[in-house]
Image 1 (cartoon, rainbow, N blue to C red):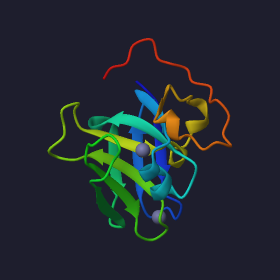
Image 2: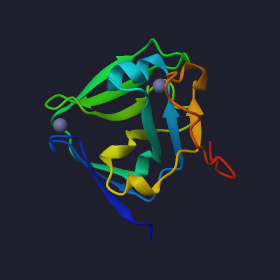
Image 3: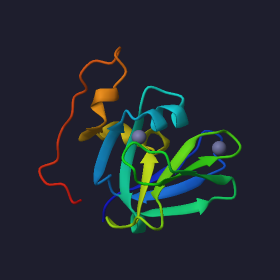
Image 4: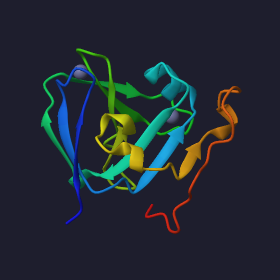
Length: 142
Ligand SMILES: [Zn+2]
Ligand SMILES: [Zn+2]
């Protein structure tokens, strides 16, 4: 049985559990992730829909991000109490790769053990960041 990890937003109002480790862990340098997070990049851990159980989502709010650099509409979900970025979901009309929860990794207990295996939009990486150590997975499941 893969280990389960507890996750929550900053205030703890949103609680969830993930099973196993992310099948992809992507650092995203796009402008929208920077704006949404208020930080230099987002650390996006990808989980299959069935591997995430959201226990309390009353505070969860949704922003439909139609202006992404990739051109795919994304649904950004955040806590309406503390403002944490919690999940990114593909738009319902854009489930070609299957439904996933993309979770800001530091929300999940034990995320320190994970190493990113890809960067998106490295050309937009903040100039003060050095090359980031990436450990590509032997075989991507996407
Ligand atoms: Zn919160
Ligand atoms: Zn992004």
